[in-house]
Length: 95
Image (cartoon, rainbow, N blue to C red; front, side, top):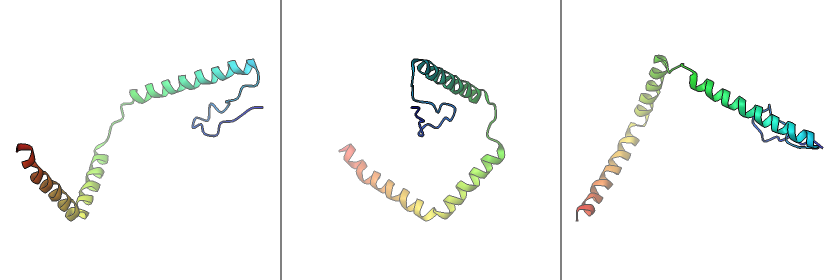
């Protein structure tokens, strides 16, 4: 009986069970082909020359500035609390 692994993300390699010795060889073939596809895909990813454009950087900056404006008081309070704890405990280091 053949088994299909439903947890696998790569749909090219659905066959996981082996009924006969012949199928054991074909399962190894599936693994080799899947590995080659993975290596080929990784090489293509490294060869890409697409970069982040100016528009994307501007949009990211706008979102970050908006978040800072919305949470300004909470961020200021957090930073002040952190620095006050650092200053309070800094004397222990020098004693």
